[in-house]
Image 1 (spheres, one colour):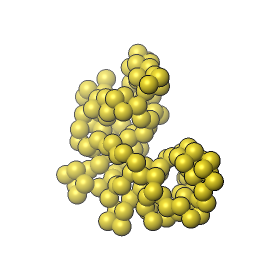
Image 2: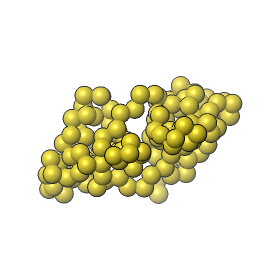
Image 3: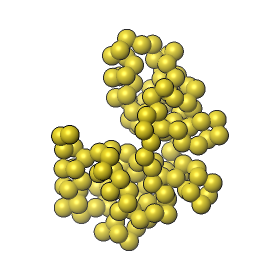
Length: 144
């Protein structure tokens, strides 16, 4: 079903970034206020630098005894995977499965390489068949 759709057709628009120099405390408050569990991390040039999840903050900051007010979001940027907005939506699903990720930034390559949206499990649930959702779940949640 996703074969005829582009990534931009299934993404959520209006994604807000946390700046790489903002604290994890700022990021956690943004997540609370936006009711999301993940934020893109953007540099001063507004280009995507990475993603940060609520779990990242708990596991890589709080559980390690670090101060979320002193630690910067950019410190947790990690490996970045994304999909071109005009790419086939199946490419997005494949990328998420291969890298076992649940959120995928959507970049408008033709429009200046800017972040324009995010594809999440909820987006996939609205656009995949039951069989495709089951296959996605097995691939993403399979033990390494």
